[in-house]
Image 1 (cartoon, one colour):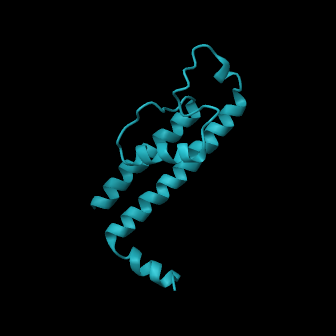
Image 2 (cartoon, rainbow, N blue to C red):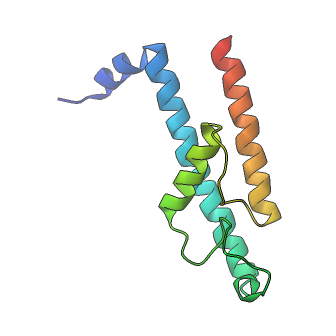
Amino acid sequence: MFTLVYLQKILQKKSIYILFKHLLIVIFFALAYYASDHFERHRHKDITQDSHYDGHSLLHAKSSLFDYFYFSLITQTTVGYSQDVPLYRSTKLVNVLHLMTILANIVIDIF
């Protein structure tokens, strides 16, 4: 039976602990990106109707929670973005916080 004690024994291994920690960070920031974009999308409803909007951003009407999870995972693994980028300042701020968290975690994991 899967218990909390069993989970604690698994997480005592440093590599599993680091992986689990990074997965939680990915999920947390996916929700933060979603909340930020959802707020901005409702503040600026006319952005998708502008002629200069190309649809290649994190903010488009068809974004799902999986899209935000994907964006967060790509950021966390430092692979890089293909076409999805933050559009609004608040989402860019969340991205900066995410990148700083990655850097801090790398430093903490090394030492």
